[in-house]
Amino acid sequence: MLNRRNFLTAAVGVAAAGGLAACAKEDEGSSSSSAGDGGGKKLTLGFSQVGSESGWRSANTDSVKASAKEAGYKLQFSDAQQKQENQISAIRNFIAQKVDVIAFSPVVVTGWDAVLKEAKAKKIPVVLTDRSVETSDESLYVTLVGSDFTDEGRRAAKILEKVLETAGHKGAVKIAQLEGTTGAAPAIERAKGFKEVMDADHKDDWKIVASQTGDFTRAGGKQVMAAFLQSNPDINVLYAHNDDMGLGAIQAIEAAGKKPGKDILIVTVDGVKDGFVAMSEGKINAIVECNPLLGPQLMEVVQKVKDGETVERWIKTKESDFMQAQAKDALPTRKY
Ligand code: GYE
Image (tube, rainbow, N blue to C red; front, side):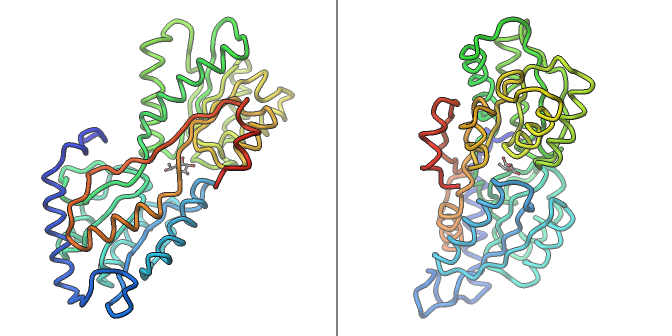
């Protein structure tokens, strides 16, 4: 099994993928490799999106569409509605259409080898964006453009320390965790990073008393949080793997007659506008940012891959953390 850290050292895969890209160019008989040059054939990018489960996802989709347009690429966009089988058929479709490059954000980490081998056989390079895959063959994709989710989990635990301190919290910390989509990289890794800090520094004072998936949606967050409050009425912290689930949970907390941000301290991940609004209203205590505006970086990488240039194995995104006190000032500058 490969973790994201291993990706960085996988230089062989990059070299192989560079070769792949070069072959793809020949295969297509493309007269020009640079997009928008007027004379040459437009680069065709097949993009399979996870779905439209969250505010993060909408911002990501807009970013991909706008930057493909800006780059002058022909974009074949497909929404998988959070179903792996839809992504597999979208990718097969891209292969049949002989697109120049395939990019996708894999809904879950496992189960991609077969379809990625089909792309490789047709010499179509694959770029992962946002989420990673687990594969036994690193040559099946060129690079990943996206965030370090394990680190986001660690940052969430670190910022929870500050939140507890700011709130003057005393006594046991009983945490409810709303997990992202089961089997998805951000769900696995945000849980892992958080637990790492908890096990190292808070073995005695913190406990995850309830943990379940809310599938990264508001409806999921609301429903699962309502059930948590029934079974564990003494929960005093919520760690939600994204803002949307946190926002759904806030509704459930209020419906149970409790005050989000006070009776239950809340830390979420993403930093979408609605999350910041809730934080400026005092309902979320801190947010770990995960930047969805990956389009420009993705288009740059796609061009390089098409041109047979070597790219880094993992192209990471820069992100920050925000406490409630910063929310009002930061809100007008948020871009998603
Ligand atoms: O945090 C969540 C979305 O993969 C980073 O997916 C992405 C996650 C994001 O549904 O809101």
